[in-house]
Image 1 (spheres, rainbow, N blue to C red):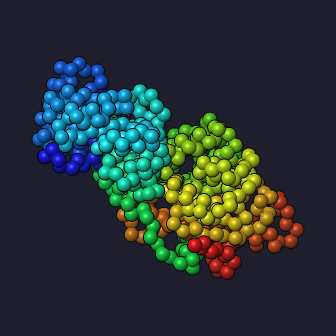
Image 2 (spheres, helix red, strand yellow):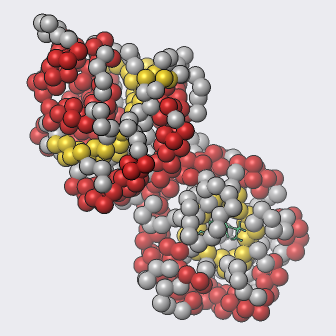
Image 3 (spheres, rainbow, N blue to C red):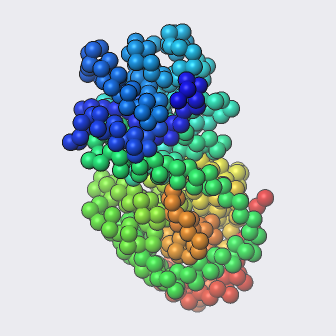
Length: 523
Ligand SMILES: Cc1ncc(COP(=O)(O)OP(=O)(O)O)c(N)n1
Ligand SMILES: Cc1ncsc1CCOP(=O)(O)O
């Protein structure tokens, strides 16, 4: 191992002797190295200099045996004394330019960053790497700054575009949330993390070797999958329609279970529309059963229409276990702009799990995008976007999922392509819950799309890789074309429309969808 060998940052162990679970510190370190840790930072917050030095010397001897570089937290004197490969500095530690003068040439200097400004300063000071965090809350350290969340990482990574500076994320990272971290932090300029820094998931594990192996293999698989995220599909509009119809038929033959955490106003009609599609609804909200339901169901719908404090944990856990079980999760952020409670909760959800589709009206999606362009009143949108095509494309890139913007024309994008759908009848806007029923349709179609995937290489992916673009298109066509057919019935009114709509969805034929579909791709 030479001083100028490049460092592999993929699994960066930060030590903490207070968290050991049964094994000694040195055993734990060695097991972690055998498990695949690629760089080690000695972090001794409560030791005096003599103890820190001794731990650092012993750690260095073990790291040398495994040819893994050693970094020292905060203390340049200790780094020099043990001939460490570098130091990790905090924002209030010694400035990088001073540390650089004290450390031997070729040493690695890393710095913690919690904001884009700090990343820019790290760039100016020529840091070798940045530790971005804390991503999530953590029991390991008392945080003085608000966690940045997965989506906060993307903009920080973007600030490193064009530089050689490496980036690792830190704070609350576990093998179970790693896929969400890697996929969700990827910047829209395609800048991803070089590694993850982990304390408790390794140090406090009963088997640190196994914990490190799992983190390492998950990181590698997720990075590979994230790099292949770029959908290069060149399907024509007609092929997409074919796929949407195949998915529609798939729902009827596969009869997937659709887990729905939805609002109390629409629960009954959402369950009925799901049955009419050919899927099987389960409307369950208890956090205790989310893990089992994620395994059992084909997809999860989360609709925040009647959000209450008691609903929060179920939604947090539902999405988390949905991701873990590689099932599509559909988010319907109903009325998200109505209150700060909804806004901050949806923000929290999007930082903790990855949806496959987000559907919403202009007002709702504007809130998610941080745009003031489209207004809303309660759960209704009162105005649209000047350029909905660019809007959905950009939001899909930012959130790394399919975006379905509902309105007189519905727009659907995967971040690369945008489809405009013009079916539907004004009666849909006169009943309550038509948007929520659409959420059930999207979840049902995503479930079938995710089951229909043929060649499955699911390692590192958040789902089996279903075609959720065609699924969302198929779902919109089904509900809107059925609404047109329902509206032709004699004496139709608001009350009867809901029942007839459900009947029409059940009776809808693929040829009818093909014949009536008003779908175009917008270049
Ligand atoms: C890789 C990595 N990133 C961030 C930190 C946090 O460092 P700092 O802000 O200096 O806080 P302490 O670790 O000193 O409590 C880190 N240690 N490693
Ligand atoms: C040192 C540090 N800096 C920011 S969060 C953190 C601790 C991360 O620990 P864990 O991986 O156990 O959440």
